[in-house]
Amino acid sequence: MKRNKEKIILSDLEKKMVFVTGPRQVGKTWLAKKVAESFLHPVYLNYDRLADRKIIRNESWLSNTDLIIFDEIHKMKDWKNYLKGVFDTREEKLRILITGSARLETFHKAGDSLAGRYFLHHLLPFTPFEVAGRAEDLNPNILSEGGFPEPLLSYSERFVKRWRNFYINGLLREDVADLTKLAKNKELELLLELLRQRVCSPVSFSSLSTDLQISPNTVKRYIEILEALYIVFRVTPFSNNIARSILKEPKLYFYDTGMVIGDAGQKLENAVAVSLMDYTFRQYEEMGEISGLHYIRTKEKKEIDFCLTKSVNPILFLEVKNSDYNLSKTLCDFSIKYKVKAVQLVGNLKRERIENDIEIRDVTRFLTEELATEGVRV
Image 1: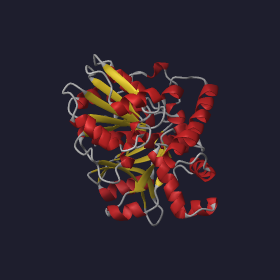
Image 2: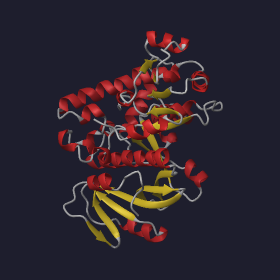
Image 3: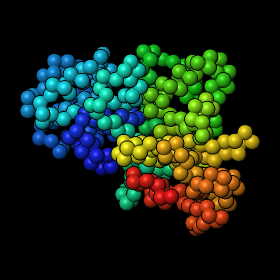
């Protein structure tokens, strides 16, 4: 299935290197090879393959190569300086595309020798927005099973369950081991299971450390690993004081909604979070707009599920309900206080309407129609 990212990646390759990063098995290699179809002499090189690794180290691709795809090259020692050298000395016709299943920006700790030489794109699972108009041959459970290509293309519940078991096993046995150099980490596996049961709730590192009998700093490090591997992402509380917001408890959501252990409401909220995160990435990477995804919670524990921001200013409040179509009083109060548009998203809604200037919308229709890259309609 065609990915929306293909067109802008082709455009960006004319100007700089392009990095494509995202979760394991989300379709990065497939997308890279679709991009390669627009070139006459493309070369795909995977650093995990010994024969390709030799070509990479010796730079021994043919002179007529017009596109090189480097896959998983961040596993190579001093990979940034290597790419800098290839890019700075390349033939004028040569384009360079880099893919990887770990967060490439995670490795930018000691200064970025690639500054100004690349564009970064995040490829996330399919969302209702991306499959709009193409959903007739797809698994209809995208909001509960997630948008990873293989589950999305399968109607078999048994296949989806088997796929997810192998997916989680691969994450823990291979990707975590690559990043941490540990063959097995039981504490991290237990943490992952706890997080799967605590989606939609603020996460306390201290509470998790007590449950797992490890230090809060170790919990923090493990969660950073899960983030680096695109297993979870954090949504922080909105605050006019951004520094204070970072210090408050985040919520953690899964890129694969099917990993959530919870009721239909929790899975729906997770699916909305993935769509909103995808939107913020697209806003920044394709439009140059700085968007943020947060939630709101007061000292009185009044809460709104999501707050979209633009240049740190709130532009949209969202409350997610699986089947409750009664308007949220908290959503109304915050919309009035901040003078910000608010929408209540409902999973099983017979009729959309406006009540007290608040839109009550079908969640699938909203995610399909309103999250275009050009911006949320406000």
